Length: 165
Image 1 (cartoon, rainbow, N blue to C red):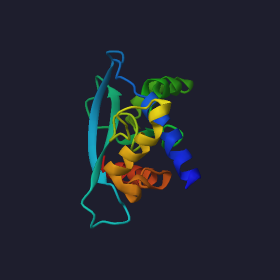
Image 2: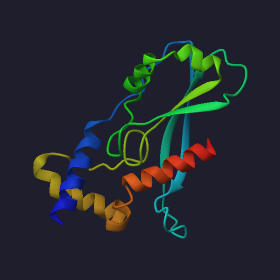
Image 3: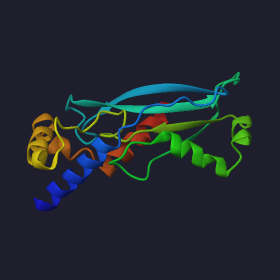
């Protein structure tokens, strides 16, 4: 139980402290925000609870056809939002113009519980309120629902997003 609470507390701190805004990209890019509803429980299809995932699709502004390929850029693990601009800037290590010429779109997504996707948040994240924060999150999602904000569920989310988008 102590390990579980430590993981929850660290995850909540990272989630709350990693909020970001969507700065504009240069005008030669077109961005499209995509919202996808997925099950909270991938392993319980009959459970009606759902969450929303946020994905940003980046294509060249002058594209005349839909991209044939998608390059998915992910933050290294669940628990943090995409911080998408930093990730996108790291793409410049290879020839982005050639990727766009080859009909590639960039797809950037926030894992469940982070960034613009359905967040794990508390009313107050001060150190004194951390116990209350864990209780609040458990009251919203339940212990079984809270356990679904995991790497395994994030992998199922990504598989669904790739197939759908």
